[in-house]
Length: 125
Image (cartoon, rainbow, N blue to C red; front, side, top):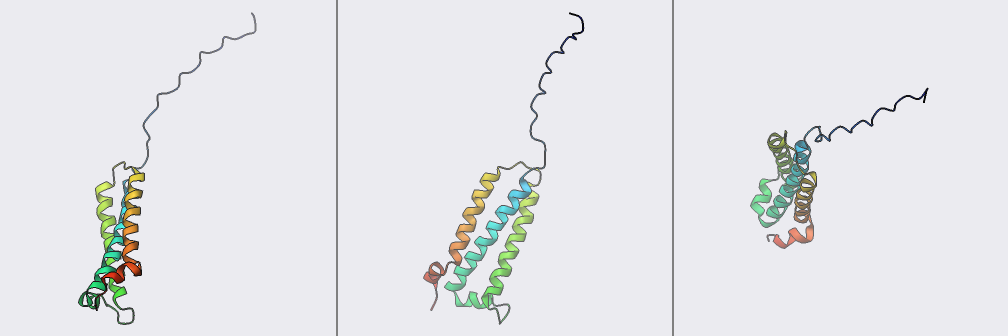
């Protein structure tokens, strides 16, 4: 059989390597921190309805009222949570589905706290 070249043996597939890339820890950190910020806003809203004195202590701006303090402290909780969780998780591989579920639960609880039929249950007279 002249003119035919021997066919090379089929190349073996390289062994599968573990996924190489950036860890998901920082992404999980910001997801959970967003939930923490929302939860703090919900807690502060309920607490402000339950206590007139606490509500007045949150009024950092007279035109805005207690909402100014609630949003400032919720933002502080988000930033502190984000920094702390990023430092703790920055090099770790994290299951993003679990982080998303935690975030959704925290967001839901925070939303519940800002839902007027709910927080009016605790309204002080």
